Image 1 (cartoon, one colour):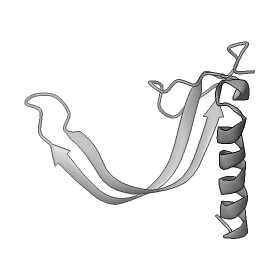
Image 2: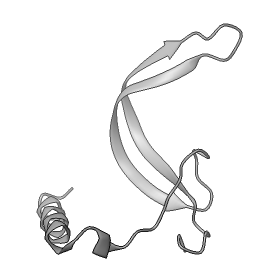
Image 3: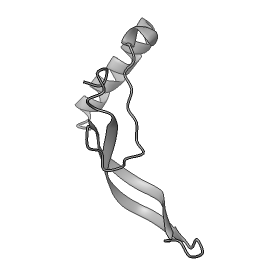
Image 4: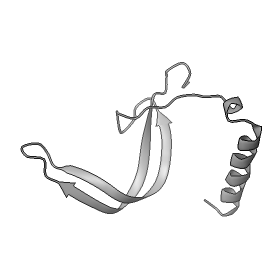
Length: 82
C-alpha cells in the first residue's frame, strides 16, 4: 500500500507534558511541544498532520545483523508490556 502510494502520511497520538506558545506578530501563535508521551504512531491515507510522509524500504538494506538487533529489541519491549 505504501509502495503503490495508497498510504502516504502518518498520524500520532500523544499526551503533552510540556509546551510553549510563541507569538508571531499578526499570525496565529505557534505552539511548540517540548515534551510528550507518544502513545501511538500509525500510517494512513488520511493523516492528522498533512505534512507527514511515509516511505517503503527493504529490510535487506538494513543488513541481517541490524535486523536481528531490531527483532531482539522488539521482543524485549513486548516482554516488558510496551
